[in-house]
Image 1: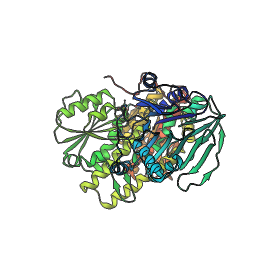
Image 2 (image 1 turned 90 degrees about the horizontal axis):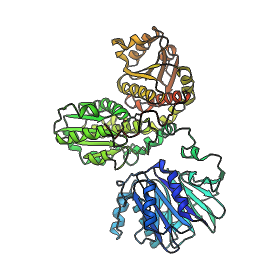
Image 3 (image 1 turned 180 degrees about the vertical axis):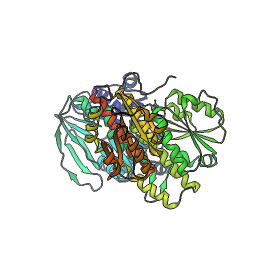
Image 4 (image 1 turned 30 degrees about the horizontal axis):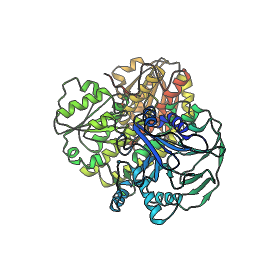
Length: 615
Ligand code: F6R
């Protein structure tokens, strides 16, 4: 996820684009850049860091005059965050420049073809490949920029929202989208381009939201002309009147970033698959595994190190890896591991999981593991983060920036990456059958749609939240793959509502926690149909006979739990191994609504920070 902004009109463009980028920084903030057309050339300044760093640099580096400019705030996907990989990117001739939000999956092949035809590349990005492809088509076919963009986009596979400028056509910007958002603000003889309407809300309330598969030529002389990228069909511009305020727009209309991020999960999980998994042909491609397969194959043991929510994802992975890959797994709190003189063998594989990639304890644990000669593999969200650089290899989750302090989409995308890894390893090692492998791939492919369906429980969860918001304690129970989900549900509630909550394996109740049960105690029980169901139903009966209040998280169509529970929340059916990706959803929503009802600061809970870079 990145933010893009553009302006063409009668005003000075630079301050509009700069302010717009500041508003879009929530979409990505590892680097930023702006291109300004000075009447004859495209002047460009970009840097690793925040928009404020860019401002310092740009104002010393290039003149800021000009009525056309466009800029980008980056959330790295291809290539680490550095000055060179930052956008905008020039074409080889420097006649064209581009900004891009998204991922071009076939950029490697396109890049090789362009190199054969004499093109050179300064960055590691997919975006620089795209702008040179457009340039090549423009020259070879003798077409204008709009046509060249259209032909190029029909050759690329992936997701994008782009803005392209050609200094030979100084009155227009060409924009297009597929899978990434793009809005055009329509003013009086001026136009604004942006990932959402926040950069132009004070200039115009009229906006066109491009649909997937559409492109537009935005011209000071001819207005906005929209076409379908695939078949060149003209589309009438649908100008909408914006009714939202600035804050609502940044949060995509959601009240809090946390809720927005909960709802982003179907897309975030799809982005995690993108370019890695082809269910129809049964192919999983993961460079970090492909290049180091022998290490994983020969490992006698996998040690997972992480903290907090990432540690919970590690626990889910323990169950999944042992089931599919049949390699023993140990899951360690990084903060304990680093100080307890652990036994690490050179043929251990250590997997470090971290959303931020900056957690100090996880970082220290990685260094310790490396010292012992183990191979360390990172699962991070933030591209180019310290942990992603410190590990020998890794896989990014591609969840996009997570702003809410309580992790939501980071958790489900971490599990997704670990499932894909496990399936790949299991297939290569022959620890699952061909049929099992294909069935899991098909099921995994359906997960984004099923997460969408799970999210429809929101209103019902609100009712449950209203009923139990005054409780002082909560218990969360689960078994197997859903035991770590119970821990995660309890952590979410503690973090943002400050209600004491504990997660337990359901069968452990009788060894102590059952003493806590009385009519004041809400107990959230995850009881999916294939997960030791009868045993969990017995556990529910035990709670019921002690007058505990039961909230069951069940598979759609469940009957037995419904009869016993005070409330049930249904999730769609899937293979048991993938249920954590669905059962987590109502638990995230439950903690969210309780916190909102208790008037807590959901996105920035007390005493917490998004990235824990201290011990
Ligand atoms: C919980 C939460 C924290 C983090 C933990 C590790 O909602 O956000 O528990 O999961 O601090 O952070 P990362 O994953 O960035 O290493």
